[in-house]
Each structure stands twice: as C-alpha cells, then as structure tokens.
Image (cartoon, rainbow, N blue to C red; front, side, top):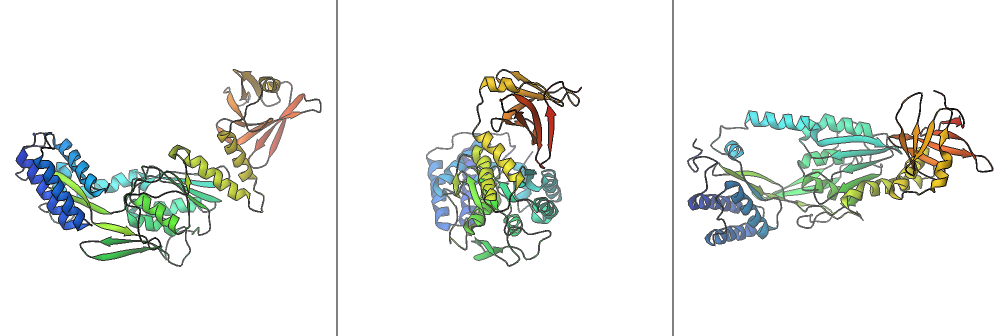
Length: 429
C-alpha cells in the first residue's frame, strides 16, 4: 500500500532519507506557525544537529516520533509540542484530502464525546450538601451545552461546589468560558485572551451574558489540581484563581498555556504545533512552563479531603446552624484523624438491641439489622459513643448509658435529624 509516495507501508523501517524529509517538513511548519518564531528557528537548528549527529538511529517510526518530541520539547520547554506516527490521522489532516472536514472522523469524535458524557465523569452531592464534579475534559460547548446545563442545575441548591480537574488534560477554551460563566453574575467578566501568531490577532474570552439555568456567583467554589492538570484545565483553574473566584487545592499543574493544533507531516506523522499563547487580563501573563500554583498545596490524593474540610469549616462559621454541615464535618474529621477506643469499651457495646445486633470481633464493632439483612457492617468511631455505619453515609449509631456507665440502648441517628431508640435486650427477628 502506497501512501503519498514517501513510505511504502507503515511497518517498514525508516531510511535516513525518510527521516530527513520528516525533519525538514516539521521545521518548515514550526517556522511558519509556532507562536514564538525565534524558538522555532532554534528547534529547527537543533533537529538538524541531532540528525547529523545520528541521534535518530532507531528505525522504528513510532520511536522516531518520540525522539523528535523529546528534542523539540527540550529546546522549546513547551509540553504541548509532540510528534506522533499516525498514518490514518495524518492522511485525514492532509491538504490533499477531500475539501472540508472528514464526516466520518467528525462522527467518531462526536460519538466519543457523547459516550464520555462531554467530560463529566461524576457529579454528586456530598454530605453537608456540597456539590462535587469530576470533569475529565473540556468538550465542544455546542454539543455539551445541555449536559452542562443539567450539571449546573443539579448543583444549584448546594452550599458549595468542588470541581475536580486532577485528571483533566484540557480541551476547548470556549467550554472553559461556558462553565466559568455559571459562577459569575450577568455582567460580563474578562476571563482570558488568546494571541494567534498567524493572524496577529488577540481573541478575548468573557463570561457569557446568556446561559441556560441558574447562576451561582456567590457560591463557595474549590478546584482540585494535580501534575496531570493541563492546558484548558489549567486555564479554568488560572481564570478562577486570578479573579479570586475559587480556591485551588492540590499540586502545581503541568504548565501548558499555548493552544494549537495538529499538522500532517509526510502523510505518516502529525505534529502538534502551538500557534497561540494565553494572556491573562489580570496577571498579563500565563502558566506556561510554571503551572498554576494552588493556594492550598497538598498531594493530589489528599486534595479532595483538604478542599472538602476547608469548605465545611467555612460553612460552619456562618451564623445559621446547619445540621448537615456538622454531620459531614464530624465524619470527615474522623476519617482524617481516626479515633481509637479501648477494647473493653468496645466489648461493652456488643449485644442484642431491639432492632440491631452488635458484635465485637478482631477489636472491631460490627452492626446487623436482623429483620432487614444478614450483612454485618463495620462501625467506625466518630466519638466515644457515636459510630458511623460503613456504606450508609446518612446514618449513625449512638450508644446510650445509664449513670453507672452501663449501656442501656442505642439511638439510630439520621442526617435529617430524626432519631430512633433501640433498647438493649432481645433483638426482634
């Protein structure tokens, strides 16, 4: 099978002549489109030096792409730049392809985005009425607008929101614009600008005047970050941080602020070339090469607990009493600082109660409701007498004692505030 006359088949080993053609074409594209022309010249010079020094001896096309990526990033320090051996995509990107977008490629992209729920991997309400969103990508806002509207509607009645972009590699700046718009008022706010080299033009992104659903301009907002947070996910974080609209929690992000696109190389490879750069209206710079630094720095695996705790503490400091916040805060504190209770105290709680059976085993209490299930659930201490029931976040057990310290019963505690007493003695079956 012949593809463009450059290579016979993608499994064939690359000759020195083939490699030189690829390098020459990459250099031409970089010098024409890369956002920093002087850096493009330096990259071109370095690739030629590496080629002459026989740094690309490996005959594998895939490895050749990896080596080129390594050397281009070494000079530019730009993590967006990458070269990939991908004949199918390179052919679709080629100017020789039929005019206009490839309908089949577009269909596949749209299907993949829909199946991925337009980046929204998880949306839930945590105890304390705190919204949590696990967002993995910023997709096309035209296709994903209804999903965004649904997500924001789900979050509208929460006390605060945590956006998790720890596993988000980026995407569309106009989707960043849409999601950010929900957390500001109707008056447009300047979020970010993108300078495009070829057009020599600067494109501004402001919050949208018209969005579907309720705005949440005053709702406490947290963003979780990691080293894997990149590109548009960094813009989302940086926008909200620079505008003092959100608290960032986690690790410094990857550091990629130069948007771009894929360019075909010899119909066998493609190279991602950043053709623009971000300019924040407040800082007048961006996060390229340095990443976005969170206000609360913790390891990424601790970021959710840290943000959740900080948010709950802020909610508790309000004048109004919120039983659900107190409930959630007690549970999270117990998770972060596990409480140890003496074995003899735990043993004293074991026994039969009206609606429950409590057993002591391996220095641990377990609870069963005989009339409902044969399953025993672990009890996790919240306090000396109060225990969370594993797997049931909205229910706890509090043991009751007489003045002499003897356990007389237990109360089932519900997050709604309802209580149900069970007397110690024979368990109903």
